[in-house]
Each structure stands twice: as structure tokens, then as C-alpha cells.
Image (cartoon, rainbow, N blue to C red; front, side):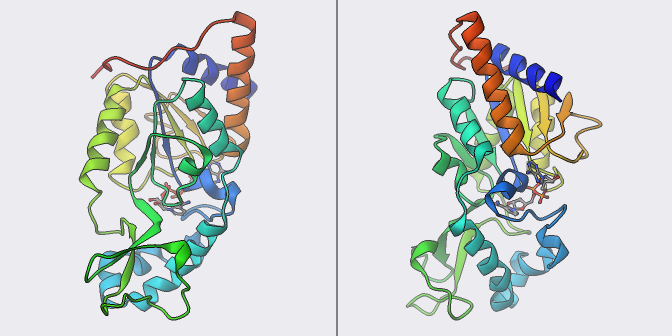
Length: 263
Ligand code: NAD
């Protein structure tokens, strides 16, 4: 694994523009369960039965059982060493943006400034009737589903199964995938579309694709150049440490990522 960490650090240092795509595995070490894999929400609930938009419309109280559990875990969570390492990569001038499927806001809390929220953010809620916005931390979810003064039902500002990706996020994610020359794919099973197409776009446009995940994914045997098998909170800090030692040895100044991409 040490060889691959060195290889990833070298790739990042040589790259003109690095973009990360992150998924639920990124926040496992912050105490938020993923959907799939060991300890995943899927072991207890079928998310499509609870957080498909049609399920929410026909039985919001049932959907809110899962939403409340996830929301509480998100409000308790703090960035883990993996989030902090990605923030440090940005500060070092080595990471342009993060496209995240996560709805927990932990990348921003860690300090990353360009985070594309592909599936929204569970810390924000909106009334489905009058459009009034709320902060999750201000609500006490004693009766479910939570309601607005106008009589409408509140919904987290997240993309449910069956809903479209916010157009701005989709467009920016595509631009970032097309213009990077190295993509880090961290903690995602890469099976939820259209997010799963993002690394394929990057690869198609000439980028190196490096996965960080304890388990292989459908990408590992096709799109990825290699996979570093390990937890995000362990592997990412090691890559940052390797970059720092490279820098100390060579006394080189890291490049800023600017300019057009290969696509
Ligand atoms: P997923 O649940 O389908 O897959 C999780 C992946 O993370 C797996 O491949 C697993 O092997 C890997 N993993 C587990 N622990 C890890 C660790 N410590 N370090 C690195 N990788 C680890 O996740 P997904 O692909 O992101 O798709 C699920 C959907 O669920 C997303 O759309 C997301 O919106 C939503 N979701 C978000 C959160 C969150 O915001 N934290 C949590 C659960 C689900």
C-alpha cells in the first residue's frame, strides 16, 4: 500500500488540476453509516422504500423515520482525518474542488471552499408548501413528519431517489470532471447514477482515476488506474504526509491548478 500512496502523491504533485469525488464512505469514520457495505443503512432499511420521492409524497411520516436517524447522526458528526486531509490538500494548492454525494456538510466544516453538493445538504430543510427554509439544528423532531406554520410538510434539501440532480451542481460537476487531470474517487460504491458517470467522464477526458476504498467497486476493474485499499481517514492523511515530505526534499513550490483541461 505504501507504494500506491507514494504513486498517488507523485500523481497529485504532477497534476495540473485535481478534483475529488466523495461518497458515504468518506464520513463513516465520522460516525455516519453508509448505504451499502458493512454496517450500512441498507441492512436495516431499503432506502428506496423510504427516500424515494414517491414514498415521501405518499407516506412522509415513514420517510421521516430514516431521515430523522440520518439527520441526528449528521448533526452529531465532526470532520474526520480524511476530511481534514482533503482540506489541507486544497490549502497546499493541490485540490481544486470536491464533488460530493454526501449530504452532511462535513467537507465545508473541514475547510474546503469549493464543494459541489451533488445530492444537496440535510442540514437545510424546506417547506414543501410555502418554500420557507429551516436549519435542521433549529428543529426538534418530536412529531413526525415535521410541519411548517402554513400546514405544509418539511423536506430536507436533499435529492431523493426519483428526483433530478440540481442543474447547477450537475453542470459544474461535469465541467470539473472534464477539466481535471487526476480524479480521487473516495468512499463511494459508484452505483448511484448520474454520480457514477463522473469518474468515467474524467477518464474519457484523459484524467488519471485513483480510488480510495477498502472494497473494490465496479470502477476498480474498468475505469480506475488503481485502487488504494483502505479507509479514507487513514489513506488521505498519508498521501498529504508524503506530499509534504516530497516538498521538503525537493523545495519545490506546488503548482496552482489553472488553465483549460484536456476535454
Ligand atoms: P454507498 O453507501 O453506496 O457506499 C459506501 C462506500 O464507501 C462503499 O464502497 C464502501 O466500501 C466504502 N467505505 C466504507 N467505509 C469506508 C472508509 N472508511 N473509507 C473509504 N471508503 C469506505 O455510498 P455512495 O456511493 O456515496 O452512495 C450512497 C448515497 O447515499 C449517496 O448518494 C449519498 O447521498 C447517500 N448517503 C450519504 C451519507 C452522508 O452524507 N454521509 C451517508 C449515507 C448515504
